[in-house]
Image 1 (spheres, helix red, strand yellow):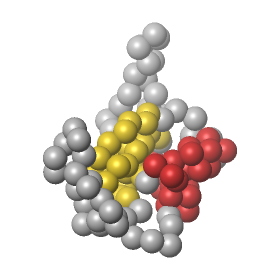
Image 2 (image 1 turned 180 degrees about the vertical axis):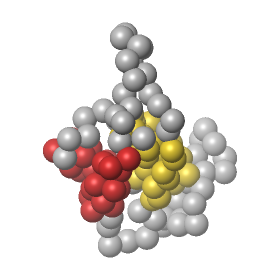
Image 3 (image 1 turned 60 degrees about the vertical axis):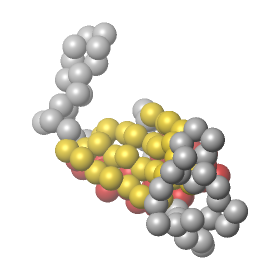
Length: 110
């Protein structure tokens, strides 16, 4: 299994969520975040909460089967990409297994 973490511009997140959902990725987690990447937008200023950040982003997290990960990555890129700089980044990690709390069933497909 793969864990995909994507840091996306807030104005692109709805488009990404809808595209992922249309392609069968129904379960994901979203978090508001702030980044300190190389891209600095015009008029950027430090956050009131974090004095070292200036770039609002949405962190999207999802876990999928290995064979589904490339489709998820391509969907995110196609829908998060803009003509400008600072579109974000995607991280991929291996997940050994996942279990549903209610049933205790493994979500890993052999």
